[in-house]
Image (cartoon, rainbow, N blue to C red; front, side, top):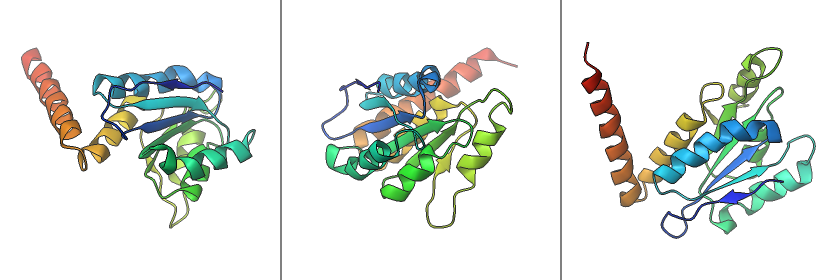
Length: 167
């Protein structure tokens, strides 16, 4: 299990980031980096819905009591990780379908977006960990004014950089 934590955010704000395998870590690190740039604490771990089901369910059940407010889950293939987590907690879950060898992530995308009614998982594009981090930031910004301010600044900088490019 890989675990990385940053702690630049205010007390109690934390995003859990899970990958279904170690091969997901390079993509998921982009979410960690994006959150870190906005001062939001996160932890990065590897847990599998299929290979470590007991630990995955325990992680989900204990997430809120450990201070997590949102969980980002990236998995490929059958991509059940986000759904298993969502079934075990009421925290917001953001799924990242991971690129796969044979179907380039389409299998993962369909698995993540086809959650049954009543167990929602927000889903971003295949491999788009940055958007998962920004969606988590937007959710936290509803509760934390300092996060909202950083998100608005990020968005303004993004707009400015596009406008500077010209026609």
